[in-house]
Length: 239
Image (cartoon, rainbow, N blue to C red; front, side, top):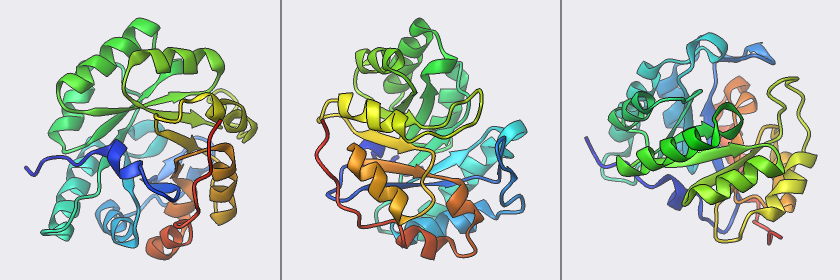
């Protein structure tokens, strides 16, 4: 297997990086693109210029599977040939080491850890275990306390989720409040609420280095056109 490219490095750009997500369904919207060919869509996203791909592997709420991650990795390697590989993020409710090992074995560059779903000890332990096996981490937060915990963990990309996981309501004010608190040397991701280029511009105004876009891209008739419409928004200073 080819070495996994750096997730964090791929998000360090002069414009706002786009993490394009493969999302078949969600708790808030139900079926989005239930019959999606994840491999074909992943190649579309990558060739259109997505900086990274997020592959949902949670089956019950999002219709994903670990097999999707394996298949996407193989498709991306084949499509890239001698070119640069697009890094993959395993997005799931990760709570134990075996899920990290699965992600690494499937060719992921990074895995999502959700602060709200983990105790401080769990988050620190899982982040350390991920780094030990060569897997980067996207630490997702939603309030100041979670952000403080995430920043103390060590090197990791920080994601601010604008969606309340209990009510499923999206509020951009969460990113507007938290993103300026993230040190400039860390990569900060605006999660949830981006449906078009205007959404990317809102994220940039909050100080985001990258946006994670799922539903809007997965629902689009042409994934490549949809990705290209989001690329090229200049980053703005944070803090």
